[in-house]
Image (cartoon, rainbow, N blue to C red; front, side, top):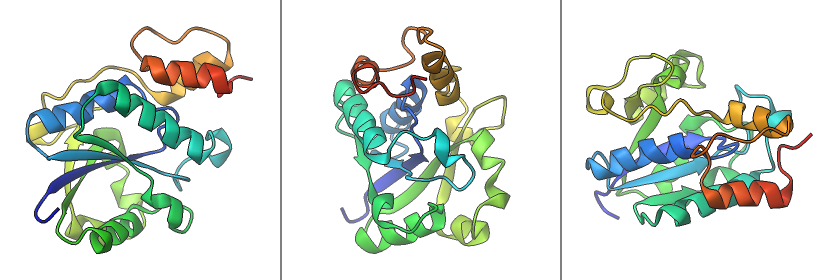
Amino acid sequence: MDGKRVALLLGSFNPVHAGHLAVARYVAERGLAEEVWFVVSPQNPLKNPAELAPFDERVEMVRRALAETGDGRLRVCDAERSLPYPSYTIRTIEYLRKRYPGVRFTILAGSDIADQLPRWYRAEDLQRQVRFLIYPRNGGAASPEMAQAPVLGVDSTSIRAALAAGRPVADGWLPASVADYIRTRKLYAQ
């Protein structure tokens, strides 16, 4: 693991979708990181916890989505399970740096999330400790190396709304294994 470059895609993944997978593959395929870890957050302090599927269900959906890609560079990380709630990114970084001392971590974030960075807990410490790769989202500016990253126009909120209303989710938005899991477990249904 010494010197390995790992990009962390942190999120609720409520549920994981094609947009998450596309940006992670873009990073791996262009050598911006050797691996991309999907860090599933038990509770994002900026989101309503009542809207979250159970943590273990979200971890399982990410596992299934990554297995379906067949891309060994994409991995699930449930490290935040053992950290205090709510999930603050700086605590996750400090934990992962202790656990994997030789790894060079980068945070992969959408431009809409990056705009919220000043509101994050210990944001200045975080910016001193890790580099950010910002991908374009909702018209926001991206890092130069991410400017050509795919923008799919899919988001978890719209997927949950469709499922809650009993409407079909647009083709290609969810990996088949995740769609099957949601249907079987009756997640997001009203």
